[in-house]
Every structure is written in C-alpha cells, then in structure tokens.
Length: 266
Image (cartoon, rainbow, N blue to C red):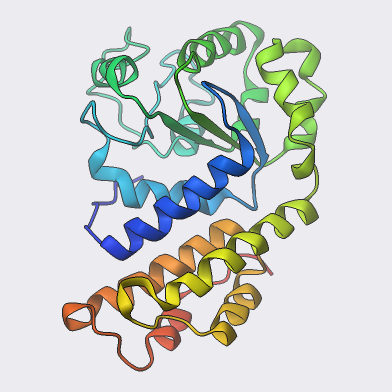
C-alpha cells in the first residue's frame, strides 16, 4: 500500500482534531486503556487519520502514533496485518529481529500523547497459539500508561468476544465496558451525534460558510451516518474549500465534494 503524503490543511486539521478529541472524551478518560469498537462503521477513521498525520509520525513529539511492529514470523498473515495497520508491504528497512523499530521505541518513551489505531483486528484469530501469544505480549507492552488511547477496529467484533477466555483481562474487560457499541445501531447513533455537533460549527470556521444545515442532513444521507464516511466527506469538503484562493468559499463547493465522494455503504 502506497503511503499518502501529508498536505497541510488547517481546516482539515481543526476538524479532525476536534472530532478525535470528542471521540476520546466519549470513550475513555484515563491514564491508559484499550478500546474495542465495532469496526466497519469506523474503518474510514483509520485512513483519514493516516492521511492527516502521515508526515508527523517520525518525530518523538508527534501527537499521533500510527505505526506498529510487524511480526516477521507470521508468514501466512503478515500481509493482512500490514494492510490492517496501514503499513507498506515492504519491511526491508526493519531488521527481522526487531519487534519495535527504533523510532517507535523513542516515540513510546518520550511522547506525551499516544494514539494507536489498528484496523481489522479480527485477523488475529488466524494466528496459531504461539503467534497469538507473541502478538498479545507486544500489545500488552504497547498499552502501558501513559498511553492515552488505543482504537481497535474489528470487522468481526462478535467473534472476538467468544475468544475472551483465551485472552488476558486487558482485552476481555473493555469488551464488557463498551456496551454502547455492541450493535451497529448504537454506532450509527453515535455517528449522527458527532455530525450534529460538528457540521453546524463548520458554518463559522475561519469565518466562511462551508455547509448549511440542509447540507448537513445531506451528509447524513450520503454517508448513512457512518463516522468514517462522515470524516471522509468532511475531508473532501475541506480540500475543495482549501482550493479557493485565500480560503475564500466559492459557490458549488458542497456539490463538488458530493460528486467526488464515493459511497461505500449501500
């Protein structure tokens, strides 16, 4: 998978940071933690944050953590793991014996704000017992405080719950705590809530009108209320807005963003 260059965009930065802060406050306020989310509805968030933060990952003061160690011995699932973690399928730069790359070790040691996103976490079910234990050990090390938040985006959350007796309490307990996300309906309600809070604020962002309240309803219709899709659309909107000279809003920005958006959920 090709890496996506980060292009500075203050509008997009503001929107994504605000939404991420909102999600964080909704889910967890603690020194450290592990969060399991029902993932198809949130998978877009992974890609959006990667595109936003792709060039900010290598400094120890970076506010985002988006890279995780590959497991060199997992031949059968290595490609799937790399895809899920949004890493290029080429690990020549990482010594095969290195579980946590040097820059990641420095990041974990010095950065004050750590956010990890792992998509499609259900693929760990394909691992054998030894590889699964190794994977658990790495995760346990990575989630030690003061890590602020970890998203686990699982496309098959229900089947993970049946594994709980095979997993340590750091995984099993949060599965019981995040009850509000135990159905897609609950996730959609939360997604709608995010849009209702964020879309009207776009009206006054930087003093330019971006979307009307009618447009906000259209966004819900287009995205089916999925937060990942909402974020994708908002980023398209921000790109169209940024294209205007000196951030001057132009007629048709919403229509252009709508035409570029590709519906993924029927």
